[in-house]
Amino acid sequence: MIAAAGLLLLSLLGQGQAPAQAQPRTYYWRDTSGQTHITNTPPPANAEILEPPPPPAVEPGKGGSPELIRQSASRGGRRQVVLNPAQQQAWEALNQRLAKARAEGDRRTLEAVTESLIQDCLWGNGLWAMPIVPIVSVLLLGLMGWWLALGLRLGSQIPLIGGFLVLGLAFGHLLLNVFLYHPQAVRLRQNLELLEHHMGTGKALRPEHRTLLQQRYQALEQASEPIQAPWRFPAEVQSLREAMKQVMVEP
Image (cartoon, rainbow, N blue to C red; front, side, top):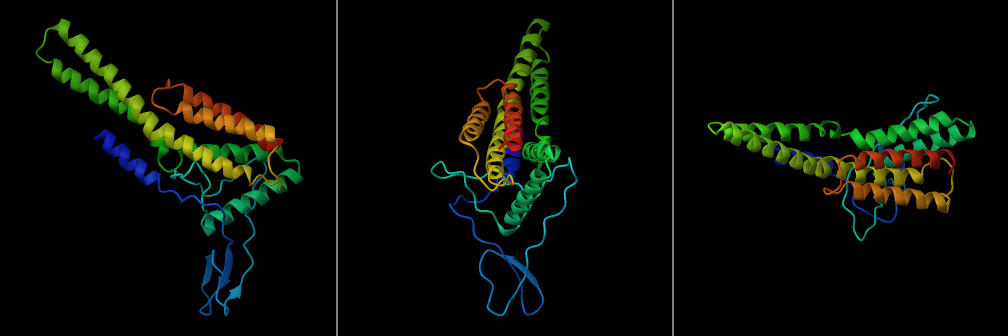
């Protein structure tokens, strides 16, 4: 039952965008009836072309995250995704916010935006509820062991219940890796790779910074495997957070 619920939750979280090489242009226009449209195809000839809306303001020292890219499939190892018009607008707005923060020397805002994006990747869209899965697993299997131990001698009850508790811990760890750590690792990599191109600098990252982030992404994905110790993934998340803030402040 727990696994089925986890699979359902993961399927809802995993509705991502298909990979592609290029991102289409966004068009803002109004039709003859007065309705406003945002499309990635050119408007009809009789449409009124509109200016893109300005990015919303961000208070100094506070973050502002665009619409996140959720977990998506990849082909041929490519991790690029097609952004819909709303996502393109949000990421471009973020790029402008960060460019303004850089021009003003506002380091607090640069770090706050990075932290906000990472937190949303980790816990947004229902992922905040997944840490309860190991607890439920231990409780259910512990109760099952206790029920099976009814009627047995005391010397047989304790090993049986203890064995089921250990089994619950192992099963909970597996569920945690599959339904929390893996989606978090994928979402972090996809969105932080997008952030690398929307840092408000107008240029590519330095090679040493690009190499550093790639190393952190790979370490994070390895830590999300079920055979890894449960404390390794949070440690790798912290390492990625520190590396991303370093790159954000000094790209």
